[in-house]
Image 1 (spheres, rainbow, N blue to C red):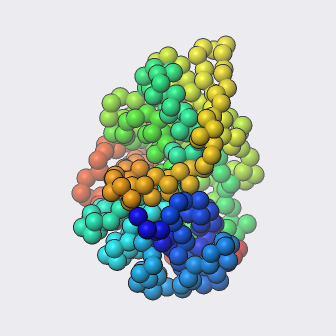
Image 2 (tube, rainbow, N blue to C red):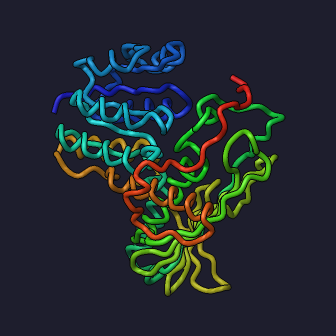
Length: 362
């Protein structure tokens, strides 16, 4: 196959991870970048040795015949329109997490890619990080027996009104799909599903806001779900004013014969056989050779080349969005919500903020 031309649309912080990953791929090149703030696009274009074409409008980029693969790195509530347009233009698409703001939007993205015969992958890169792949290898080798539970805790920085907003898009009216439950939680539940080998069947949630009222909808959540084959998954995120993180933050995977922990900040893996034994697990050199972004891009590149299934399908990405939407419904109704969600929730995007929001710091 000839060298594939890649394009990145949306040149915020995450765009540089994609540019670096693309630069490491065989038979690939960054052909174009686009952002409505064209100066952002120019800065990304200047980072590499090969200078891509810079666009201020994605319609112009999609008309570029040198572009074969589009990386969507714009806010979640804009994913659907761009993904459908990319498919209609015949471009394979790597869409950053979260997939979209509603179930209908997810389905329309999947349908558009299938209709035009192009590949669609969702950028849930966390499950492809070295520590997570190592943990899955241990599970596959039977190190802890049958997995029956996954629990996880994470931290982030609260956004009090006194500080102003850290960016513009997450704080605009509606901000559908960009709250912590969908935006961060989609990674957490995807990786928990990866460890458990099961999918959520019923969801119960508490979602709160201790420090960030008027800025974002939520800054705390605790979400539990039962899975289709009996496992339990519990995921919590806590925001604080300091953003202090625990050294034990991350995943605990519980099996019938032991426990695996995946420490988040330090990317460490440990195996616990009993209460007196905690064995540090050395992560394989083959896994440490590339980060999650690079691994997912490489696997997607291979799926295109071999016309094979992508490593994280639209259907998989949609399950993560559905989990988050069910959590919002559970918190609102104070009861368990069964999956799949019914047709009446096809356009549900979770709660939204008022039209008037604080000024941003950018």
